[in-house]
Length: 173
Picture: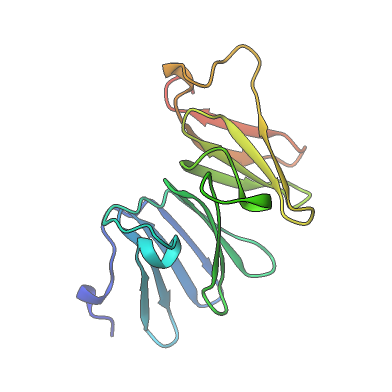
C-alpha cells in the first residue's frame, strides 16, 4: 500500500500515464508513481530545472512521446525528461543554442501529426518545437498583441485529426 504522506500531490494540474507509471504535475513539482511496485518518486524544482529553487513549481501540462520522453510545462520553461534515467533538458530564456527560447512560462502543450510539439505560453502566444531538427518558432496570431489582457495565457492546446491546432486563451476562449 502507498502511504499518502509519501505522495507529493497538492493542486494536481496535469496527469499522464504510460504502462504502469503515472506522472502527476502539481503546484509544487512532479510526482512519479509506479503502479507495480507502489514506489513514489518526487521531483522538486531543482531536479527539474537546475538552479531553480522554489516551492512553487507549477506544472500545468505533461505529455509523453512515443520514445518515452516526458515533456513538462513550467513557469521556467519546457522541460524534456528522459523517463529511463530522469535526465532533463530545459528550453527557456536562460539557455543558449537550440535550447534558447525567448520565453519561460508555458502552460499547455500538444503534439501534431508530424510529432512537433506545440506549447502555449503566457503573453507570448504559441511555440512550435521540431526536436528532430533542433528548431523552434513563435507563432504570431494576426491582430492580437502578445501583451493584451485578452491574449494573456494559452490555457489549452489540442491538435485535431485534420492537422489544425486549436488554442483556448484565458480571456477570449
